[in-house]
Length: 273
Image 1 (cartoon, rainbow, N blue to C red):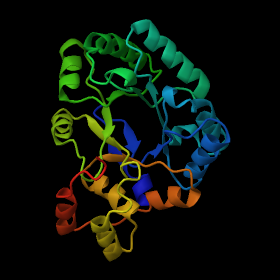
Image 2: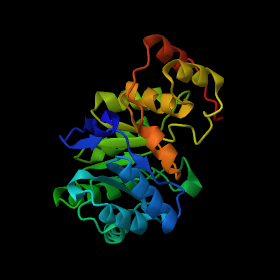
Image 3: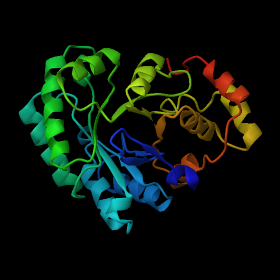
Image 4: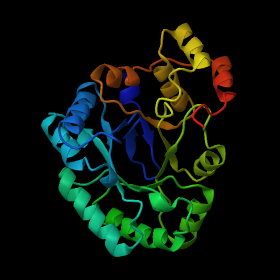
């Protein structure tokens, strides 16, 4: 499956497989282990988790048991959003490192610019403190790249003003009708890879008739059109499922949307409001 083999190249030259398997809301234990194994068996080579998901141990075990060489699997995890101190960041990374137990992390992200229970609150100073720890981890080779998640332009500019390494990636909620144009353009200008989580709007797009009609022309599902749309926009999609058939289907996106169909999708409003 070329879409799974294709890669994006981050600003530091590191190649990242072009579709990631997301593990948000997949409980630790058999669910996370089985879903991760199914993704690896289907050909995914990019697995995305987070300390906040509580499933790093099962994800790491699945990677180790899969038989896929470690250097062929790109592993992302995230520092909890509420951690805004240097000591907290060091502890969080060490805990993720221990639980995953797969050696160096490939991409380590600040999960959000603010704690989830205080969205929009100002933690710029804390983010800078945490980012300086990220720079240390990156320099030491404990993580091969560093980035952020849920950061908008103001958050990114604040970070850039007082730190040395420009984030290699920004993982944001990105799907048809919710394309975060300002943040995406800012990242493009600074060679920050945009990763899109919830490419199906957490299921919100699946009943969309306009997308369904486009899919029928290609013999593809709504999910496949939605994921392909991100690739057409040079955004790395992170679909998530626990169903092996859907995990495989989500990566079967080796087709090209016409300019007319992309324009139709561009014009759709956010259906997930």
